Image 1 (cartoon, rainbow, N blue to C red):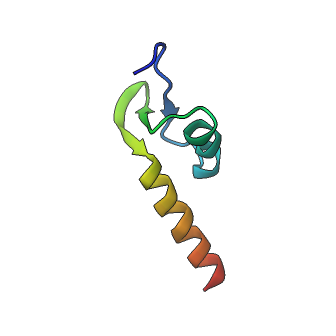
Image 2 (image 1 turned 90 degrees about the vertical axis):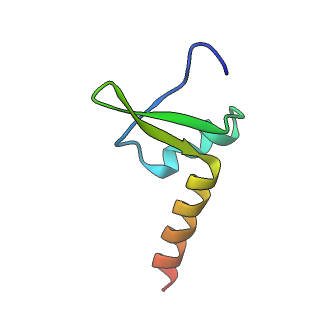
Amino acid sequence: MSSPVSTIDAGTHAVDLIPLLSDRGLHCLPVLENGELAGVITQTDLVAALHQDLLAHLG
């Protein structure tokens, strides 16, 4: 874990997560909604979301 902890807002678009989870070497990010922990998003979650989006655009 690093300090300070990097977090994202629940409304953050999936594409905006790419540099956070690739360039910065993070494997997961806490998701905040109204300043409170709403969940955690992982690299696997991001890949799955991007895959679904790609399939929707191709289909």
